[in-house]
Image (cartoon, rainbow, N blue to C red):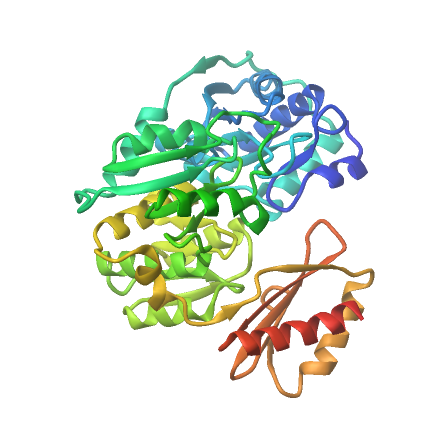
Length: 453
């Protein structure tokens, strides 16, 4: 049995994550594997679990302990070895099995974690399984009345690459020079296998798999971690730069000028392409995406549906609406053709395909999708979050439309801003978008003064 207080500290909204040796230990992952197996049996899921792992030094040992926990409950295990998170989702979809990915994504080297899914890459978050798994861990796992399961291995990298590239049957019109910053993460494993099949010249950065992240954090949502890539793109006169996070499920772009590409612009680009392929379809976007996304979807004959932030919400909404694509401002992109899972590599392939088919540079290709000015996400430490939200409501409710889909979103004619609490820390997250940079900056500063004052 494990204490609820301990489990609450490491079982997050969408995954399990904590400090290696202190919180995430082989004993814990054995127990988690057994609890996961019991949960899957209750859900009448297939009786085999596919397991992938990232390049962190602790991942193989932790994954082995987890596999032993699963097999102790009479379920089988298939180990696919080194993998990006989207490669694990591919394995779960292709094999129609539940899965576990050992990764702490963009977190520093001292951390590790586990992302879980049901068969066909169905997401497991708090409401869709983690609460029940936590309950099983607290109650203690009964001894299984069945033989111990079997463990086997399977190589799936080539199958993964074949599947992705089959979604892009057209030939590239021109050769591209591409700088890729893998951040010493799993894109250093998957990107070479993908890119060698394309008409591209790759300039690799930090492809060496190293869970200690010696060059910079593998977190491209932080601008400081993209500086090396921006410089290299300009130096090499490259057509595009790609930056992946540690487990390669997110991708950020840099244009030929070394400027950062707004993830909402990439959402718009992919949405337009997908709507040309399947007219009239539904596209999901999260509520901190640019309002340009809705405009682009509707201009191209699609139906735009707004979602809360977070992969479990977007995937659920995609299933409910039959959406063909979903984009998040955090660099996660979800595809109906990929079991509604997110894939940084698939998003990158969309960008490369569109760029190769165009005679224009990336900055001009994306210009129609960059319509407004955004602040990016700004975090503030707030002790009493409910009181601060009430203060903001009292201040802005007279002149703004307010909705509570996720935190509070205040909308006026020339701008909108969203404030929402962190799931795990005493933080209030602010996102602002204005019709002009001056409008955005003025609203950003005014709201921050209220939040931090």
